[in-house]
Length: 106
Image (cartoon, rainbow, N blue to C red):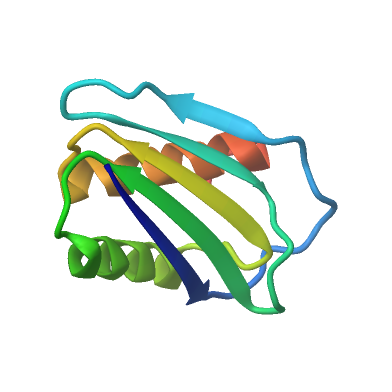
């Protein structure tokens, strides 16, 4: 199991903090994502990844930075438990988690 931690620049959504949200399920080719208000510096998002596939830190960082460029996630903390998901599945699950956290389509 590999543990990765990132602080990623992003824009902020604003609004009051919401209760944490957990989506997905760890299993073959899947992952779960927890979204909660984070104690990060302004304009940043904290992401922790626990993955069974070691050696892919650069890929994780690229996928997470791309997601943060497309979605306002500053001020949030994301925890990802990965069971071997592909980058496309990671992006889809992150989007699902963010939509559920915000309580509306984004």
